[in-house]
Length: 339
Image (cartoon, rainbow, N blue to C red; front, side, top):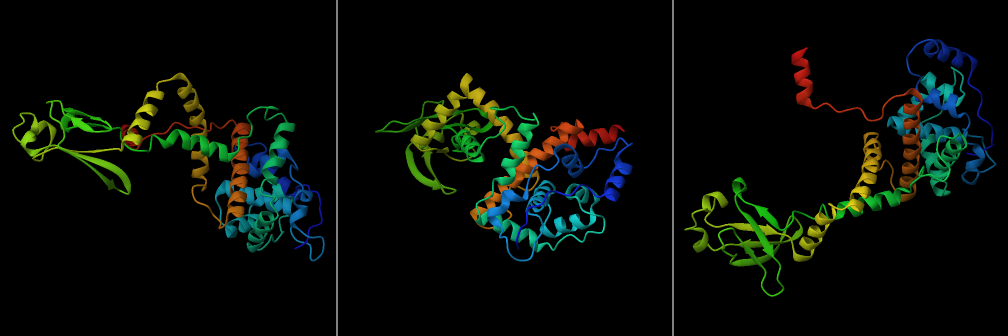
């Protein structure tokens, strides 16, 4: 496949007339593909992909328009076959791509070849960079602002906040019915666990639980047996308690203490915005890599970022709120019964 850079063709007159008839005088929102073409125009060029395609051989499909197809494919979470079918059958995609109504499109394998060439040439970021430049030029993002955050740093920041939270429960355990609060004291020479009745654990045993290091503290049956509070504390003859190792317990205690500080709350507020974006990405199929190999996975992430930006732009242009309030199953049932 070779590439001869050409500008995007204007929307076919028949296609444009059909779009105007369907969405011109009605309140129906225009599809995302139509909004992209009308609002952004030609924001990506064939010359941006010159390093991935030769100049000899049979001319192939425009790489910039294949990139558009790939972005829309990510936005709608389509397979290659469904994306190729959309190019042939959907009028909004034909409007964006400048195709006539009778254009046959391309075989779905062209998309796989396009991704392979772009990934091998190291051009994974081309589409995303071009989109951000277009948005900055149009005043849709502020120059010098936080319009772009590298995904590696986002993942690292979220992981830093999550690491200690996911370590396990703090070395404090509540007994049955909330009666007994047992506290572990990590002394270098003699670690102990003391119950509210003043008894200490008789055994302190390091072990592995669910593949993770843990410590099991066991109280003596002679202490638990005659204890008047035994039925409030355990259903067995003696109490056992699983604890974290000392280093994890102390790290988690420090993390819990840090949660009350103002700097942590400010950082957590930033994380909330990141989680909203991650939820939107996951809902569009980003939870699992679609392709094998790191280069293609990086390309997939970059095109997913393009898709998310365009989805949010579409919501901005049409006034659609991004965060609709969720309704629980019980609330929906109550509403149904009330109706």
